[in-house]
Length: 410
Image 1 (cartoon, one colour):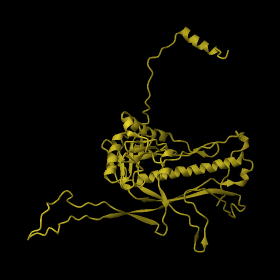
Image 2 (cartoon, one colour):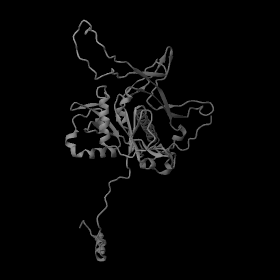
Image 3 (cartoon, one colour):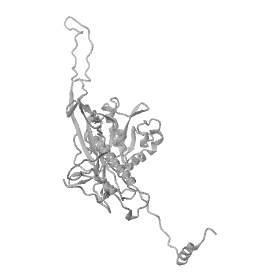
């Protein structure tokens, strides 16, 4: 194996850098706080199952019979019952994994680098922010995948359990569709099965995860009834760091800073990633915010319930019998690796940071999960034009220009 290149790792003094060195971070997603993480259960196979006992009802629900007394030909102590059936289903889930590594770092290249310790510190912070971004995307993607209500706000709103219908949205997200979803969640038992994060005036409150503009539009729709519908007293502690200051019409509004966005091209959805391509810079690469992402007309919002799925993370295994192992982290904690190799690293002078992540998504009540694709109307900025303007005369213009010479500190 050929030794890696080390030519673009650290900035040098020849560029006469300012003493202040800055790094570019990635914002933390709301999903980090909302998703419930539990330990993966070892010893139960690589592919595991969760069993869900479904709701069942007897036949002839509204058919009742008149009560009669026993006679010589009838025995009223023996009834003709309606049988309540029983049913359950299993859902499979398994672990998935992802590894990250840094660029290689050679000790000899650090000797004359500018403020090398500070550069290395910021480089490490950049690695950790990339892990945060990946986990936020993972939680969001899994919620969308597992949710059994994948709704497109099309001309004739279309919904599917397994995939988003291949039809483009024509509507923005509004309070009307949220009211219908709220009523459906109540009818399906989401209020009783541990779905709401809080109760307000005896009614469950669910969480809406959406972009800032969609949330603001919905609040504007309800501003006439704001004093009645806005309740600031019931925000759970889990949501306080997300700057949620109250519930509106049965929902806490939370803002996803980097929501999923799409174009609809040739009958299919094409996602525009926030950082979809690396851009070469003077030394190395950077991940700029994508213009395609900023202009994408379609976005995805979610009705979040904590019991839709659980994120299962493996525990560390340090020993098996007489065999011992290095403690492992499966949440993407970066560790330093300096692996000696006779051909490329026999002196042990270079290494890399590496991180390992594993997660299994255990569905609990996917029937309560909603993922909604809708328009975001990116160009609807609400701008207003000025009225008629007055052009100054020649003498007035000269007076205005002369005013630049006026001294205000005399």
